[in-house]
Image 1 (cartoon, one colour):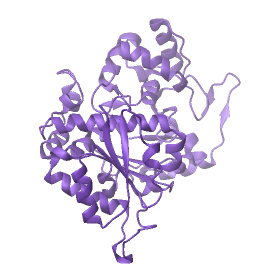
Image 2 (cartoon, rainbow, N blue to C red; image 1 turned 30 degrees about the vertical axis):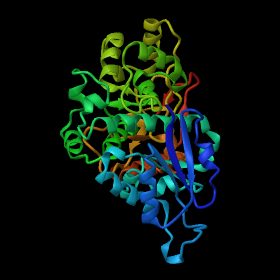
Image 3 (cartoon, rainbow, N blue to C red; image 1 turned 45 degrees about the vertical axis):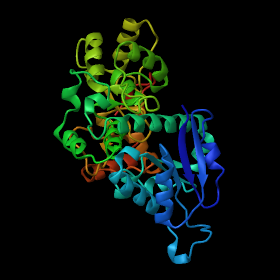
Length: 372
């Protein structure tokens, strides 16, 4: 089966071919027209995915100056139409040449709710294979979401078991899914779980929890998949994630205690002994010590970090079922967190500490351990 997509741009229609995966997903190029007319035309084409260029107002052939619009305006028309016809709903992505587009359409801003993903054209060129895989995953996911007819059960969508249900069956999720009027609303809830640590963890978070270097991610991925920890639900084929509670239970059997209560050096050693594979310990981004209590991945750099050498990230509208992200001291002192996409902000409660960290000198002993 070949999925049908539409790419709307006012000039650079070459990206329709760039995003296409032959024999799997074909994007049909579409020029700009009057917004309501174009929205109806797209709906009549019945695509499974639509890509919109952000700057649809650069060369609006045939449109008067007061009729021009950006991609978000067309997206609103399309989403409104999908509410009326949920069986025709489709994945919607935003494409732009502007690197700050991910800041403009960050998850905590209302406009981002229109789009499943936001891509920069430079990234599409540099990560073509990976992004094509993500687009195919969106198609498969929406196919699944369409098929359930607005009857969304979180465990069914996440391909979970009865044992998993208590970890994701939160009232906030149940209520939102019950009120979901179209697949894109359910997709937004799933991506909220995929994009942020909570019931599901990205591989770098799993590495941090196990106290191992993120460079060993591929090795531990094979081990965790064999152990039945993998998330296999909607969108999992392009966004690999791990059930946090399954990981915790599995790690308990190896470490015989709470994993994050052991230095990363001990966890790496025990994990190597248990699996027969060699794992390097995670080292603190602040002092390079392998003996810190690494417990989470830095929201900025993705390296394993420890509570005492990190600050809280500001998380607007933080759902209770997700974990607050943190930023390691190294990213604070080097300002790397400001260049994250989208940029991270420091929680007000830790602002004074962050200012002190910027001025702090680092001391490390000759063995690579730390002097805080």
